[in-house]
View 1 (cartoon, rainbow, N blue to C red):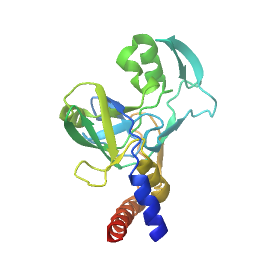
View 2: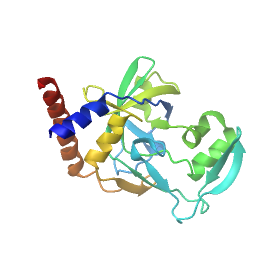
View 3: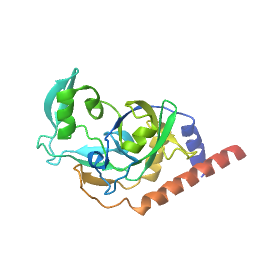
Length: 223
């Protein structure tokens, strides 16, 4: 435990912070679900955030669709919604312009989804956020609590009232995912699709990780 504590404290001392971009999916239907549940505090991370992954259903690489704002846009070649995998029911704290809101990961914002890709090509601007940027697509409650407008923000693993907030892109967050290794939920990203609820195992791992953090802090300050 002592060697682990030293490693953990060293990791906690480094914060490689990355920002995210906040948009809104407006309502339960437009936000969709990977986890089989919906709610006003739903957030859908873009691919790469919080371990979110999406793959086209036909298993083939996405096809070129257009060049928008100097960047290539690709879409699933079967023109079907991709299958996405997320950490269902994981809470994230989002801060934007001094406002905070706790969101719950229940969905995803896939870059090669036909709707997202075509909207980007047709309209550009904010319609390209999930395609080009690290984005959290938020339902109406979270979006309203953050000020009701798109924009840059910071995000942490854990709820806003947690003292173990782990910043997106930081070594702490990577350490969390490596230690906990929570199971992932997977579903086709189409409205009304219901996948199994997130297993109780996640909550047990989450509590165990915080116990390890507390123990590491305790051992460090007792030395």
